[in-house]
Length: 242
Image (tube, rainbow, N blue to C red):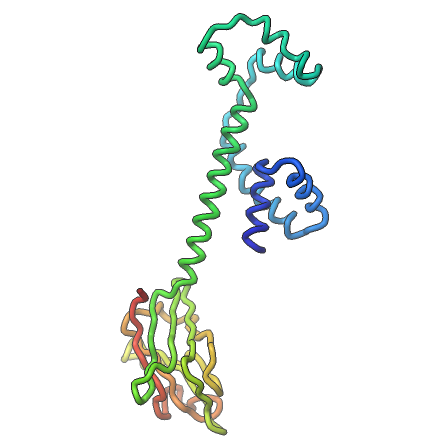
């Protein structure tokens, strides 16, 4: 689901849209399942605001204004207010305190701020998850950068080639990592030609600085011993990303 669609659904649920935009969103609910799902998500998420607010009993004056506004045109709905004597600032503050539109506006403003904060934090978290925490530059035998290994906070790792490399007929390129010499190197990838590759680190400890990554040339299908047997084509150690 796109971020724009998710944000639009949040604005619709908060009542921040008006006129044609609100009508378009209302019509879209039946025709766009993804939008309808996003709307239901925000309704469920923002329901906590309604549940956390204590119940309030409107005053008699508020009910009088509601009845007047719904029973007569705006020009005829003000006699009750006109009969009430003015009490200066006290009366004005009392009117604001008892005004449903004012409190509705304050509530929508707070909810909108919360929505924007949630979207901003979500964006920052996604950007943080995409940024590598460790980077290893793998150097070839002549000390030229040949590939880069990026590791991420969620345990993922990827190999990105910087130069073309294909294994000869009957051979494979095998990627290894080593963080504990007592355990020895562990295979995390096997390819016929070097390409962007998600390394298989599932079940292994989280990558650490100085962890070794290397690519060796092995028989087709990988090393028969579970350890590197062929020549090392490139290697490098991980360091913290800038």
